[in-house]
Length: 109
Image 1 (cartoon, rainbow, N blue to C red):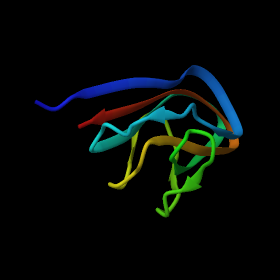
Image 2 (tube, rainbow, N blue to C red):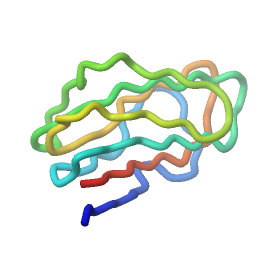
Image 3 (spheres, rainbow, N blue to C red):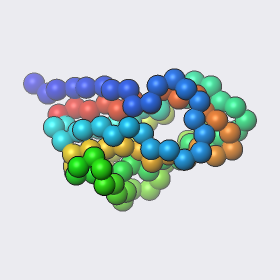
């Protein structure tokens, strides 16, 4: 039987500019998906994110995928490529306004 876990990384507040999510240990998992719930917006923001990997949760590198950009309210997903190592996070930039976010990571393995 596979294990499944969904965890909050950033919870229900307005974000703008550049930030990184809290890291999450995923070495046990086979799959990971970030869920980005945009509940409110101010102005016309664009959310751009890059998946980052780490072996120790301290030193980080891009996973080599293209950055993901999204706009608008609702639920958006960012799929993580396989072979992602021990820790994951998102490097995010919100330009053109603010977004009220609820950001999760879901892992299965």
